[in-house]
Amino acid sequence: MKMIKAIFTKQAKDMFKNPSVLIMFVLFPAVAFIMTTFVQIPENEFVAGNMFVTMMASIFAGMGLITAVSGAIAEDIERKSLRFLVIAGVKPHQYLLGIGSFFLLAAAVTSVIFALIGGFTGVELFKFLTIMVTGTAASIMLGATIGMWSKNAQAAGGLAMPFAVIVGFTPMIANFNETVEKFAGVLYTQQINIIVNDFESSMVKPSLVIAANIAVLAVLFVIAYKKKGLKG
Image (cartoon, rainbow, N blue to C red; front, side, top):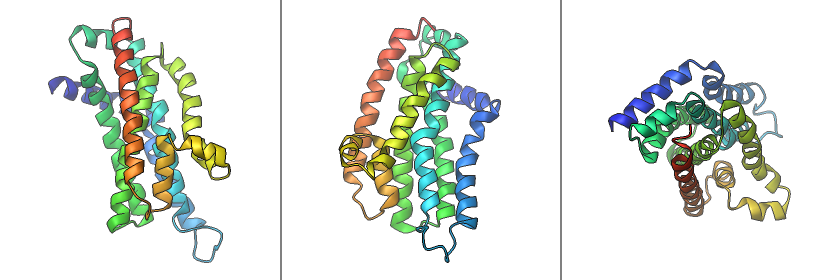
């Protein structure tokens, strides 16, 4: 527990030293608020209710955290911090929980802000926050896995961006292409998209798909941690 807390604290300090990462947690809800306030007005019949909130929330959950988490872990590898942690006996789950819990907490706060902007209450609020937290957890896992396979922060950024674009934009393309829609069904981002755009949808399948994504990525992360930990 002390190891996890120490890594959590380290990551918090690192993030507040990096405005480019910190602003991401403010920028997405800010855009949603501005667009909702000035574009999504009752007289505008072409804009569905809370369209900008759900759109920006989906992009944040599906794309925003991937580059941030991968960069944070790649920095630890580049600075040799990860190597020292491995030598000190830090296990893969301890390292992941330390860094991941910080980003998950920050993402949860951002999700609550989205919910306030959208005015969600009751069942809608529960479903929105549930899918956002589990979805961001999957993005954190993907970012962490990419970060572990990267030599440095620059390489992590280059590797993370294509993955972020694929998982982030595939659900949007799936709305217009049946073939893509079938493939998108295995992605956690598609499940986020389904729920935030239709709160009457069942949470069972989306939850199972996201859980499966997290499980697969967790295995890949552990493999990468054990392989690259002492080389970092």
